[in-house]
Amino acid sequence: EAGVVQSPRYKIIEKKQPVAFWCNPISGHNTLYWYRQNLGQGPELLIRYENEEAVDDSQLPKDRFSAERLKGVDSTLKIQPAELGDSAVYLCASSRGLATDTQYFGPGTRLTVL
Amino acid sequence: AQSVTQLGSHVSVSEGALVLLRCNYSSSVPPYLFWYVQYPNQGLQLLLKYTSAATLVKGINGFEAEFKKSETSFHLTKPSAHMSDAAEYFCAVSWSSGAGSYQLTFGKGTKLSVIP
Image (cartoon, rainbow over all chains, first blue to last red; front, side, top):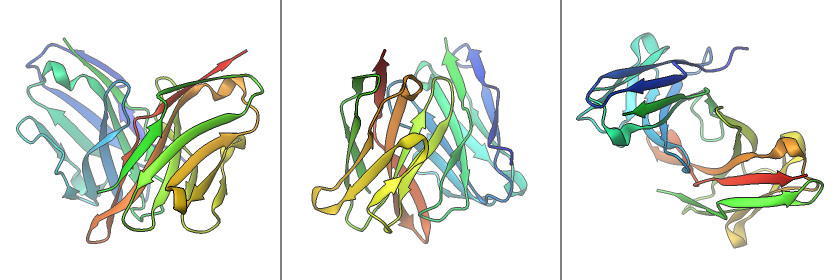
């Protein structure tokens, strides 16, 4: 069974530039999560999808971040424009969505904003 | 909201020694608790989880954790450390954010170093 796939693995951009991250979850997982992990910290939830619907985006900085999950499968997270403080690892995870279900994580995209 | 506290951002043990990584949670309802491991430049991988069955949970790679409600703890242990255990470990609690939806809140992590 293929795991969660993310691309790119690394991205270096200048501040004020746009950037996008892509995630393909495990087949059959209806719930998809985007997390941000700052250096030396645990992951923090940005947004959660149940199928196509964003059911929790309270931690997503909506002035510059956007996300979509068309057809309830792949998802894209976008930042426009990027700021220096956005440098972090962006992790995508998927699960069946129940409280006891394991979330399976992708390898992440390490973003560096210069 | 729930929270998780991991005591010790960095733990060093000798190869073959006991590994003990501490996790305390705050939860107003019976929690579901998880331990994840993260190797450098990789995503998080589940080690084990507590889902209100047995309080002593066995996971992969020889790790286990014991849920102690009276102490609100879920410490991770391994009897004998191996060099390959060097990684960062995260404790997390699953909680309901309403309407049947659940999310994880992670601790800040403990980096484990194994000394040969």
